[in-house]
Amino acid sequence: MPTKRLPSLLLAIVAGVGVANTYYLQPLLHVVSVSLHLSGGNAGFLVTVTQAGFVLGLAVLLPLGDRFDRRLLIVVALALAGLFDLGAGLVSGVIPFGASLIGVGVFSVVAQLAVTYVAAAAPVETRASEIAKVMAGLLAGIVLARTYSGALSDLAGYHSVFLVAAAASVILAAIVWVRLPVEPAKDSLAFGAMWRDGILLLRTEPILRLRSFLGMLSFGSFSIFWTTMAFALSAHPYHLSSGLIGLFGFAGLAGVLSARVVGALADRGHAALTTVISFSLIALSYLAFYLTHDSLVIFIVLTATLDAGIQGAQLSNQSLIYRLAPGAQGRITMVYMVFYFVGGVIGSSLASILYGIGGWGDVTIAGTLAGGLGLVVWGIFATRERRWVNAIDHEGATMQIGQECGD
Image (tube, rainbow, N blue to C red; front, side, top):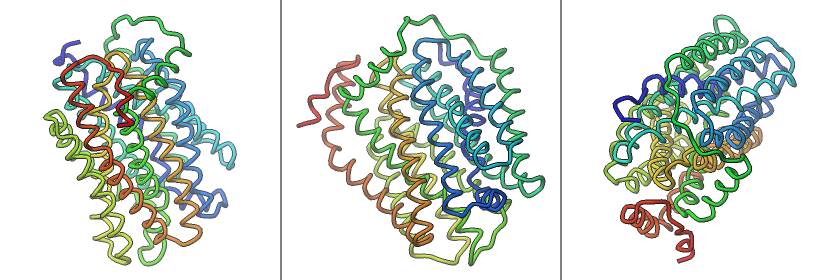
């Protein structure tokens, strides 16, 4: 499919609407905890439930894009995400609400189906830039989800957030069915074979192993922040409402802007530089959170720098892993994103526990360590990664270079 025909805008909207489903809850945790009679720490586990559902969706649904038409998969996933959004908007008990969130998480994987669609269609020389366009939509979805959910919750209660999201997903499914081109025919692969191929890629491609681990750390640091941020801002000394907390999503515009810059740099071969900058931003932002305690302006600025670092790390990783195996973008994304969201589950669970034990200060220490560990791990493997990337540049096709990992 030629680059000029890539439906980047529509795919960006799909990615934004899809990923928004997993972020509506974050600024609402305080009001949800009150409504469902949960403590702050226990309410934070609702984020974990959603992310666990997303991991399940990645493992089961995402590899299917390497066999079946992703247009059909996107339509089905959007429709089912809308169905589970409807459930979350109608139920009131903890168990049915949590069950609905699991379903929302599973089918929110549509955002990654949109990314793999463009990754499969774009030529190598512009792939990172084309992915960055869809990622900009994905990041805008994260930003608007937080802001929209906080504002609408203040006006009409948190159930209304999910009811409107259900309608948006179903409408978009119909648009995608009409407007998104059908993918070319693909080789028939059994589901078990696709899983085995994914595991084989993980075993034989050291870049995929390294970047998957870095992705796990970056999204773990993301979840550490957004799982507990609403509790920190609703408490002393800020005492903000859900609507005002949702406005913090606009700080994530820094991530949207950084995605385009990082994409352009990655296309020019500077993924190493963007990786260092991104994890430095993560570690330093958390350290500054720990050192400052009562300035709302500083809190806003640090939210922006943290999001920029996290999204920069994500795009740096993607710019390299999608060079590994043409035609296997779904399996590569499955491996990478399973690690990514396992990091999210660990981060949100850890943040809930730490906030219950020592409050916001303990949370920021954990985030600082996550960012610092990312820098250390990448530093250890930096020289070897340059060799691996150079080998791909010179030899082209997918290579069995896993043996170098022990060098």
